[in-house]
Length: 297
Image (cartoon, rainbow, N blue to C red; front, side, top):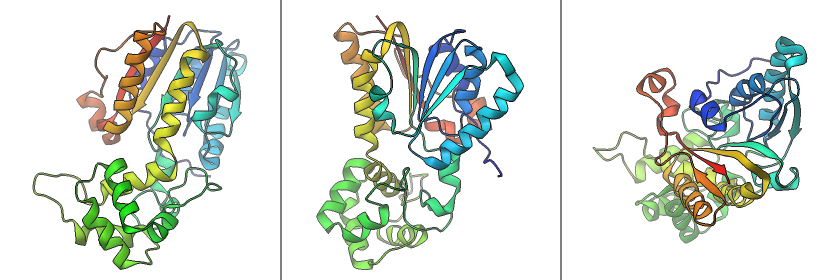
């Protein structure tokens, strides 16, 4: 199979803040295309253990291929790798309390998902309206777009997309049903809410974000993971979180601040760490990445 090109964001910073040591037990959620996981595996060594979570079966297959290549290269120096086909919110059901030396949570949509038109995550190429990270889950984006009433759609687009023109967009969607493809939806949104002069993003960007977040319960999964993290990390264990939009970063910021207040964490980042101009040039998707980190007390 042709593996998509994947460049992990903030890789050096992730390794620095996770403080990966030989023999450690580290969790990664979701594992995606194993960009970060591959680098972590090289540092864990033969006595270490890496637990990889992902609910996307295609991503898990790609991750296994990549980590098998690393294993062939490292031989006995390869850590034990455990694959868990679950959402990152379910980490607590698979990991013993107080056992993790490090936990990486990277909430970006992977290249595999964005670049495959059949998955329906992006309007850059036409495909079915799906957006599910787990193809067995419901609802799909198509079901939401075609079955929710106008008010529900407007509220969803406003809450999860921070889209001020949500009511106008929802009205246009309802009037244009049935909407079955990403290109069709993008065209409906573009006609209803044209780009403002000061905006660099496509007019459909925020609505697509809102649908993806809702369909995959992304913010609730994030809250569940952050709630579980202090119970899973051992003293001195590190939590590193990479978010990609303000809704996620706000939740992470508040959770870490509350964890510090409760005596669970020592903060490692006063402000979010962002990509350098050099990294953004190499990997434009890193532009919106924000990393926050804390150490279990």
